[in-house]
Length: 403
Ligand code: FAD
Image (cartoon, rainbow, N blue to C red; front, top):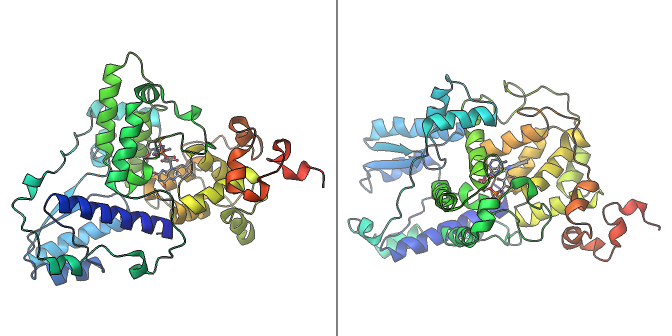
């Protein structure tokens, strides 16, 4: 976890704590390795049930199995709930004969057999907490949400994105008030280099569990139901959520999903190993302003537009540097606020033409791609102030300017 995401996560916990307080409850954050934490607290606090989010990531699958074993040993019940995705991916796999559907079209077909996703869990109210006695204030202080300094997280790396359900809901409401924008949303027509996000910017909130994807899905369904026309998957907003499901489904049934070796859906390619070029890409020093501006936004803010991700991923892999997608994925994992095991690896395989898509000759030009939607280079001027006063004519390829 990179510093930006740590801050985002702590802000999200702080917000959750505040919201729970308002409902007469409280959040206790226990730090430590999970087995030790459970062993120490189960008897002490008379815990009879442990609930957790069902996840596709091998680390969490193993954690769940370990917690179940502990439950048998220590006598607590384990409740694992599918809350992070719209569907239970196991049901999709079953309908596809136990294997993951490898195209979006096939995936949509399977979903049509399943019907709509489960409805969102209703919001908790103060009544839900009536049975829970608020813990004594001493306990709350002892198990408060840690501060960045407690965890030695550098204070200077702070993203302008603020974590928390409150912020996520505000962002959601803001977008949903513009129903015309929602119904006509067409992903490829959104702009990668706008100075404010041209898509919803909800991914960090979904990724850390601040917002429910089901809430978003059903709010969209309601808007679509009232509209004469609306865009459709794969390019609509609901279509974006289904891409997320698609990658979760494939990841949940593919061994070594985040690696090339031993990954049955991934082309085996002799990528170059070049630590220096990789470092230059990561630290925004390639010399291509469009690529370096994107990498700077990523490093400073932790979020970049989908097509900007396309640009830098293509540049690192099949486009220019011929460096393995695994290296790029690791950098994204460290820097993205929305870093996600399944979605990150899935998209990196896609962009490097290693899986799902194989037209490796269709590359994004590091000069012309950004120019199309931002000919004056305002985005570059913002993120690379060294070029702030550069003539627009040369800003995408400064090496063509006179000395
Ligand atoms: P919107 O366009 O508003 O879409 C709404 C939601 O749909 C998003 O919040 C997200 O949850 C989901 N979504 C949108 N596009 C995709 C997609 N292509 N695949 C899966 N889900 C999608 N997204 C992550 O959440 N985590 C990652 O680690 C991640 N890594 C990526 C790596 C690469 C190389 C690429 C090309 C894309 C990656 N994406 C990742 C997908 C996508 O770029 C982001 O989800 C999207 O840009 C988030 O912005 P948004 O919330 O404004 O999206």
